[in-house]
Amino acid sequence: MIIRKSAAEIEGMARAGALLAETLALVADHLEPGVSMLELDRIADEHLRENGATPTSKGYKGYPAALCISPNSMVVHGIPTEYRAKEGDLISLDLGVTLDGLVADSAITCPVGEISPESQRLLDVCQEALAAGIEQAQVGNRVSDISHAIQVVVEEAGFSVIRSLVGHGVGRSYHEDPQIPNYGPPGRGPQLQEGMTLAIEPMITAGAPDVYVHDDDWSISSVDESLAAHFEHTVALTADGPRILTAAGAALLR
Ligand code: MF3
Ligand code: CO
Image (cartoon, rainbow, N blue to C red; front, side, top):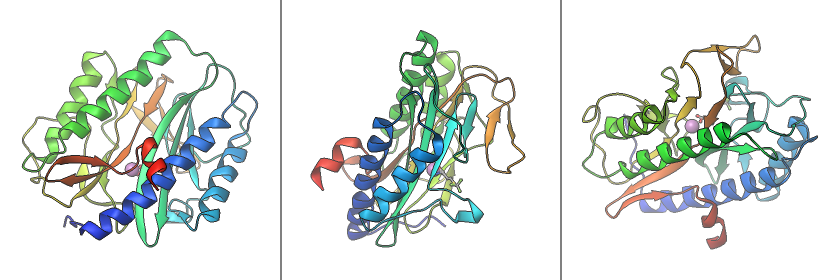
């Protein structure tokens, strides 16, 4: 069942989303060669708690940290470790924020220092794919219009969409219906309606699409060790089109 949110709930999610964006920006500011993943996690956790929010991931199905931090060929759900960032890394930061009972979800992939042109292209294409998916989040469209738009951008660039990982509804809880694959033919799945709130999140690699789960039962990496990227926004469907609730600039409006 897809839960449509009231205008008041969407405003609440926007407050969670603004704090989320501010927190990711703060963490990204500290992401320099030498910083450990555990330090980044602590910065996020403290900033959320200072602002009356909690990290949605911590304790979710036993997940132990605030952030998911996934370096290089790790795609998603990386548990923060002692690993220290080094020049040229691509580090994905994925965060859920619960504020006043409402949830927002967003991810960015950040360069550490100078990165290769191919790494930069991977980041650019993943962001373009997210923008193309969001553009399809229109009342009257269907879920797979989002999926298809993402796939086209990624594959035209010569990169791969990971098929076993999906976007999702979000808001009253972390993961709600519908699932939003990042590939597929357009025009399928539930019709999009006003008040739906969706976490749209292309997860892509520069190589093959195959992934595996590490022994920690969380971290997911590419089998061929190709670099991965992940960008995610929480979006509300309005009569005027998609409203991004986790955009960086939104923090200024708080
Ligand atoms: N934020 C992730 C998502 O995009 C969910 C992470 S679940 C966790 O859906 F437990 F690993 F944090
Ligand atoms: Co998500």
